[in-house]
Image (tube, rainbow, N blue to C red; front, side, top):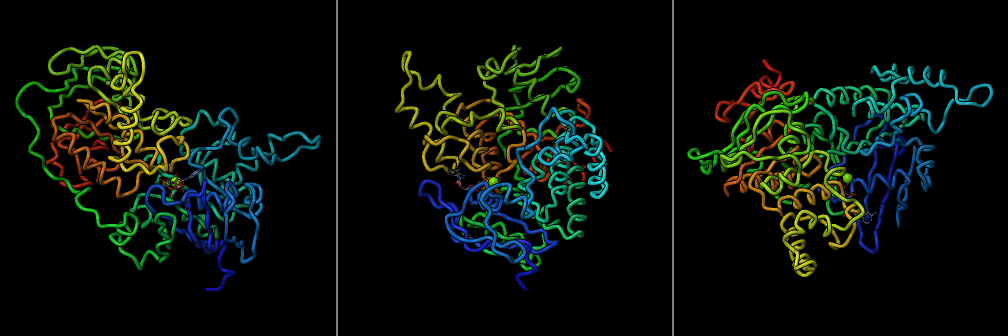
Length: 502
Ligand SMILES: Nc1ncnc2c1ncn2[C@@H]1O[C@H](COP(=O)(O)OP(=O)(O)OP(=O)(O)O)[C@@H](O)[C@H]1O
Ligand SMILES: [Mg+2]
């Protein structure tokens, strides 16, 4: 392969933070018109490598070649000038501006008097969206649009700045299934136009659907770069995790569900806002209930109503046969309920606080000694949680924001499980975690149920729902349309049809 066919070549990149090496002699290249998957466990260094390419971080050693020419990238501006565009996981748009204004924010077309020419911006934005073959209204205010449109706006922004290489870091994490499919089709079209895409994802099906080659990082070193056709999914998983994983995604019937006696949780005719309509179900100790449904079907809203975040309009919630008044999260926590929210970064963590403080937040009651906090107990508790959940952090006192995305998620999960709840609600528990951790989380969910807890799992990934649920409740427009025992669900397709209301 001739170097000139490479849109980007990163040679022997090394990077340390405070003396801790995060990237060790990593080489990575991407050809023109290629989709190159970048895979690896949580904390392997994927985002860091891409931040070096984007000029956010400076490598300690190594060089970057663009179109075969050594290029110094010391800022995001340098990266843009070199044709590198990024579709951020945390979007960089200004919500109060329109789509067109956002696209041309840094480089507005100037009118005759040197003012921002809104009409020209709208016209140019229309052209970019037409080239992308997607329909987005350039005059819509960004805050009114869903995540899928934010992402399209980000992509349009990069393309309008002539990006030749697009970095997508877990782009489907916040998309519904059909939106992901639309993104994949857009990626196919961009590829045909010779645009190169670096695609970071923990989802194997996406990697196979899109990528020409894959590079796997493990603990900051490159393990392999291969055409997808040369590696099996098992080899990839083993490469990422460092060992074979067993059982995580296969359903195993557990005998722990207590079919006799009062349900641990019973919901009767619950109404809360528009998205929770007359919902009734009950949950036995030891039982795992899966909630399936499309985006907007009311799964998250049901979880919020149960946890006392959203106001209940009518209906009853009974815990062990007794009516519970769950009018605030505190009341829910006191009643033994925990909710691991979907939007973990925003709702679950204080990013500037240490890993330890975040873990101890819901446990303050347990570590009180009179009016003071027992710091030894706090240290022990947090260390045991870090160990149990294999959170990759140099020191418990480090701020959570310095952890990799997946490790931040582990902190939220560890934090809530530390409260030892009886009823546990998990909203998309494995979003953003690597495949090894994913199977560990699923196993943990089973263990909690086996210990007599009642668990509700919300997931958009059908294999995951099928791997743990004893029953699946299908929601549509806020109502329960099906309540199916796991044994009646033959396969993923059956569940998919049920979700579509067929
Ligand atoms: N600014 C920073 N300061 C200190 N350590 C950092 C910083 N940025 C990243 N790290 C550390 O570098 C390592 C690699 O992080 P990175 O975000 O690149 O992982 P990743 O492969 O993207 O993981 P994930 O799949 O969880 O997103 C992690 O251990 C992380 O804590
Ligand atoms: Mg990352």
